[in-house]
Amino acid sequence: MEQNPIIKISNLVKRYPNTYKPAIDGLNLNIYPGEIFGLLGPNGAGKTTTISMLCTHLKPDKGSIIINGKELSSHQTAIRKEIGFVPQDIALYDKLTARENLLFFGNMYGMKGKMLTEKIDFWLNTFGLREKSGKQIKTYSGGMKRRVNLMAGLLHEPKILFLDEPTVGIDVQSKNIIIESLKEVNKKGTTIIYTSHHMDEAEHFCSRIAIIDYGKIIAKGKPEVLINECVGCENLESIFLKLTGRKLRD
Image (cartoon, rainbow, N blue to C red; front, side):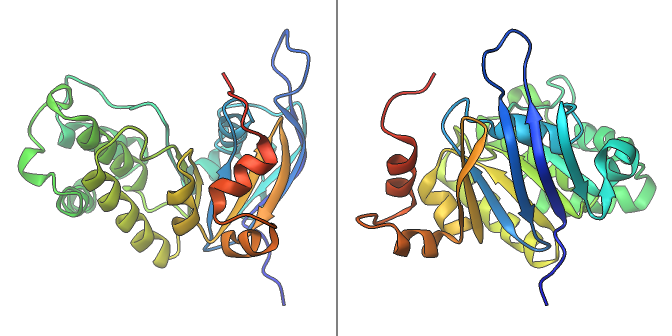
């Protein structure tokens, strides 16, 4: 018996003002509990717009989104408590320390006292930042900021975690610890939805992927299955280029 999707997207449309074509054009997609789901596409394909709607940051023009059995349009407050969001841009306060940032975001999720302190200590240890947790974020390297950014989205143990380019522009060591930690989070039951331009990373990290272009899903499935079914394709990157073309996107 097939599982019910934890995210069900039906006929989703989003058009920005003064644009000729919709950013999202009748998108349909099911994501299932426990998946690491990769949403991949060229610049401007609709990845971030889709994630922004799923996280309640943007309102769709048409269609429906059901998250964990709840219709998003009428249950936004309840859904926000069940999801975590890690944006592509660093969303931290430069003049606060790492620990102060995490205390702030934990309080936003209603966490307090010993429970919050223990969660912060756990993630600071996991990401190798406990000894530097008293330093201001503005003194951190890009990789260190990425790790704190991720911690802020994990503190409240969300059922669903949205990651928009979580490893962009960081060193190999930071990327490795982030990916391995996310795998552990997933093993404990968190469904992960992830966008990236790193095809090799997505191929080995994701249990299933969808390629989006011009606001529509043009391919989806398990990476290994898609590679086997694509004539002349050796990896996910070659599938991506075959489907979306080699022309530069702005």
